[in-house]
Length: 60
Image (cartoon, rainbow, N blue to C red; front, side, top):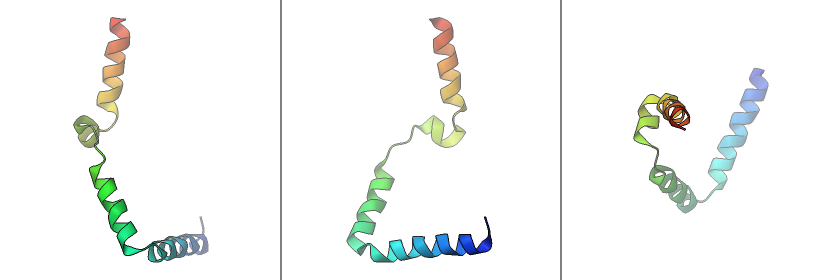
């Protein structure tokens, strides 16, 4: 990715952000914060999930 592509991408993102109304941005921010992420995934990534699947398959 060249620097021109990166500048173009960032400009598009900023323009899109500036074009959205302030109320809509606040609503999106609140929705992002309300999404629940499993505690184990938040702190340890996918490893606990993979380990749990491995154990479940082994039991079956």
